[in-house]
Length: 60
Image (cartoon, rainbow, N blue to C red; front, top):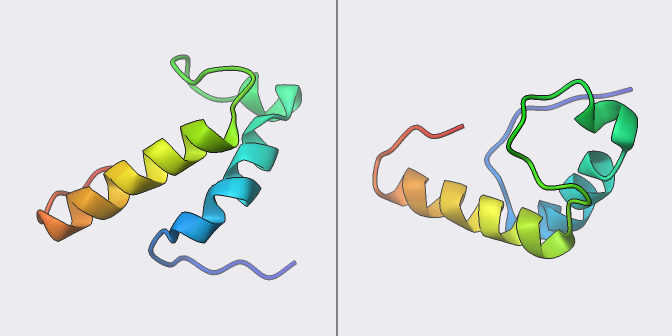
């Protein structure tokens, strides 16, 4: 499996939502993420990260 670290793209929302809708994955992450995790949740998160980059914020 190939893995690359890059900046978020709004087009990543579907993949992010798919991964975070896996109960086994969610059980191993910190609390505070909604379950089920929707594509709208992913779009909102990615938009916030992109806006933060433009403002010079380093948000994870």
